[in-house]
Image (tube, rainbow, N blue to C red):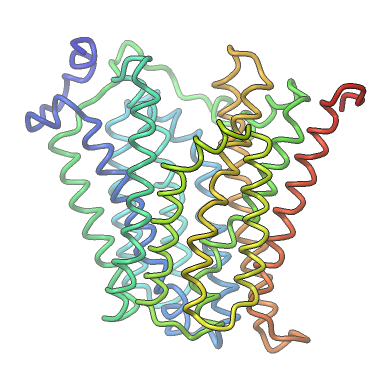
Length: 423
């Protein structure tokens, strides 16, 4: 523990508790980041309609492209931010990103046109890659045996923020569709000032290296998977599953508006219920189920639940039906950890970090493709051009994606059986 304190006791002395443990600040940063992301979700459909989109189909189409802009820039800038933090230190990169977040939310709050929303989302996509230098900071100040616990703490902060954000956003949205953006900007500003006074530097100058564009290749981590053919079908199953899972963040608010003309408060409440249910399932079900039935069966179970619940959402006829489906649907959260565990058993111990880098890159790719496919599907089937109005179309596509993931998983499993040919 003394080594940890020595590693971070530098340039900026903070208030005592946080100065001794900068993980407190990073926890708050991830929490506010997630709250800021979730707080604007319930109001985005109404904001786009107020800014001139002619109907919910057009708003959905634009909302999907906004998400793609955010995810795409985050994907490409994540390794850049990591390399910048290796060159200039973690502290300046993290603080610059927090400043950019505040600017983004102010831009979106004051935006006079949809074009300015894209500018704001572009800024947020670059700033959103702050998780890379944040994770590097954690690695700098945390002993190896405690890093898993520290990363888990950061994950719980994001989960908690995503639970609180939509609920807060839904309530603030009753004041107007721009109110949550100003609240998110205020949170980002407070977090920035907090960081200015309490966040030390964790990377000594003698350990810094020059910036390299070659090292900042966002696809580099994905190419490692070709060295382990045994994980390729698992990796493809993860990508397909995540593309389908993106139906929730990319279309939920638009789906609820198109299907039930829901208020921002109701949209926020359903998102909050989803977050709570999935957090409980991850905490109390995922590990126990995988241990009891094995990762393969747990993954198939989670994917099967996803298929059933997504079909259910597609055909529900009243808004109250969302809540029981949300409780059941939380069980789909066992699929991703089980798939990841299966992949980790297919590579040697000295390649686990490389594997997780590849999985993170695949997740980023899915987060670009998913919103594009899901939002445009919903937009088409709720537009005046559609041959049949069907607000649940994106959920049917998402169910098909998860069904495909089951097929890939079972194909890979069959190839491992005695007498089966290796893929």
